[in-house]
Image (cartoon, rainbow, N blue to C red; front, side):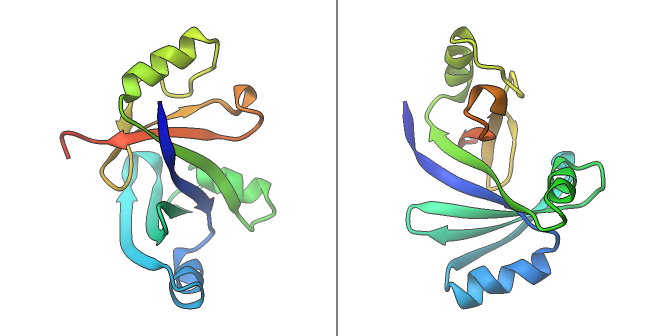
Length: 138
């Protein structure tokens, strides 16, 4: 079962330019930054009630986030919606059995001490969809 929307992923060209808006203008609680080297991003997390906002800055031109920003005229924007689940491997198996194309067939380490996996937007009404759960080994 999907428990809730965990976070919205927002691609930004530079965290240094975006963080002040979310922290100082919107007044969201800032949880700091984390580099996720294998995904070629630095993330910044904010609280917005029960949902988090994840800003994503690319660390390499080969990063999917860098390509997303380039495709959107250098501006970035909403990149993905992440849903919290209790059993990520079981959800991936369930969705694969229903014919959903999986970007990640197995969970992998993500930011904020989560295990993550993405579903392909061709099967999710065009929205890049992330599933996440707390990492028991973190």
